[in-house]
Length: 174
Image 1 (cartoon, rainbow, N blue to C red):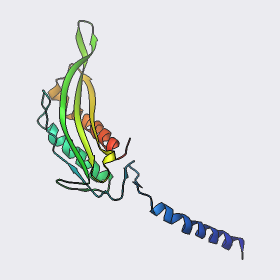
Image 2 (cartoon, one colour):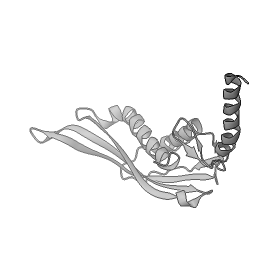
Image 3 (tube, one colour):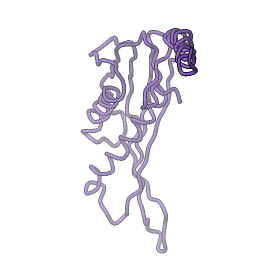
Image 4 (cartoon, rainbow, N blue to C red):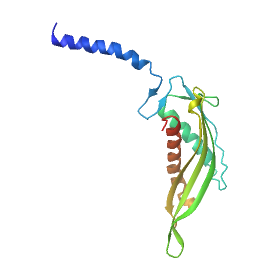
């Protein structure tokens, strides 16, 4: 036998012995950082009502849809209206604007918009993964701007951060 044939058969033997071990792993990984038990096939994101004192009328719908979109794009899970293997429930508990960086004359140089969300995650395949957590994200903007003038742009940034944090806490297990 030639040296190349010996290398080929050795490599083939290693693959035959090792491949079944990898197939039996209970967690599947993806390039998005998601680690999902293969028995998990579906998810549900329930509508998130806005319970904050100051209400952005579009925020509940935007947050709900943003989380659904991220889960659909970055996992192989299917969206269900209710009773998914993974369930996301939540409510917006804070939507606050506060002055930041006080400058001379006791006026704010910047304002900070902070959005706070209380979330409950239920893994119906493994309840050891269940949690209740609060997430918040903020964005600082120039105090010379009215919130209504910059709100749409700011909300894109805040929603992206909130959804990433929720995704990482639930799917990526960070």
